[in-house]
Image 1 (cartoon, helix red, strand yellow):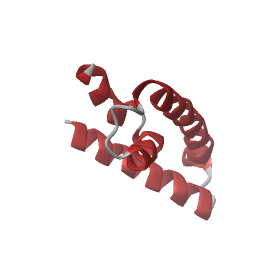
Image 2 (tube, helix red, strand yellow; image 1 turned 180 degrees about the horizontal axis):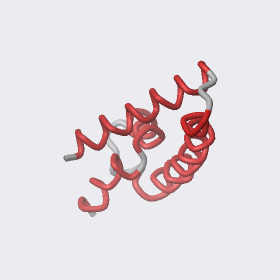
Image 3 (cartoon, helix red, strand yellow; image 1 turned 180 degrees about the vertical axis):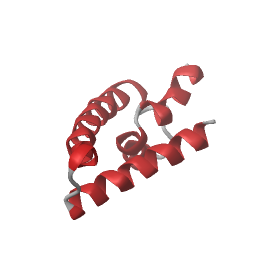
Image 4 (spheres, one colour; image 1 turned 135 degrees about the vertical axis):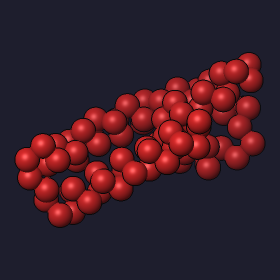
Length: 82
């Protein structure tokens, strides 16, 4: 299930970048703004991850990038490991 959610999230980010670079109009034109909101939320999640789980991470730089891309989908495994 995690892999499916990560794939969907990755598709979302690809669509956000395409909408931003190609200047899509209409409803899809809102994707870059929504992507920015999601990215800001993921930055907050990365700060939380850094504060709470950095000592549990085996590869912190990779985990931080994945938290920025996937958010809670990535770091929720650390909640169950506590």
